[in-house]
Amino acid sequence: MGVMELYSTVAETIYSYTGLSPVAFFTILSLMVGIYHMVCGMFVSPEVEAAAAARRSVQPEPEIPPEPVEIGEVTIEELRAYDGSDPKKPLLMAIKGNIFDVSRSRIFYGPGGPYALFAGRESSRALALMSFDQNDLTGNLEGLSASELEVLQDWEEKFMEKYVKVGHLVSERTRTTDNNQKNEKLEALQEPRTEIDDQVENLGTKGNERDTLDQ
Image 1 (cartoon, rainbow, N blue to C red):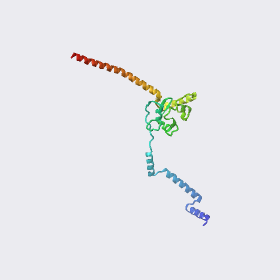
Image 2: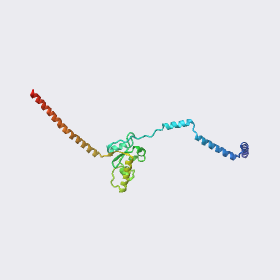
Image 3: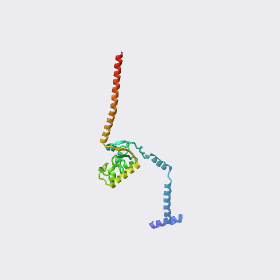
Image 4: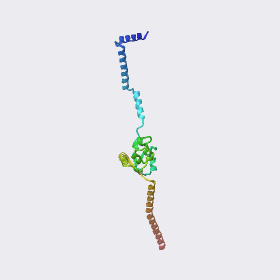
């Protein structure tokens, strides 16, 4: 049987059963298949829905960073420990000596983030220059133009509005000087106490001598 004879046989069969031409029949058939798949997509079996719900239930909830904690005076070397490499520590960065807790924006400043370079560093010069150069990660503002200083001021204001200031940078020399001054004050407070103790001890000795003479 040739192709034409086969086509004629199929066409006659379709017409005898449906009253439609082959073109109309296959057009309607394709539409019905499309509608079937569309309707199936609208309804999900209980098993499939339960599996999807199970997958959603095991998805980890977004981590909520802890409340910022005041850290006080910190040196540049100590600040580097807060670059996000330790997830137990807050994420900090400094602008113009002021330290801000940026843990709430870990997606930007944490490891792998677009601004991770600034975390744990004094980033004033880099922000003023809009630079990602390691050499600009410093608080040195020498040589900056008025417009660059204005950019830095804008950054500082944004940080003060969005993040909590938790401390400020100090040099190691300043910290050593402060500690020495505190020690000197403590020693000065302890000296009068020593003199008083000596006087009390002398009074006690004299009292014992008096008691001996009375006997």
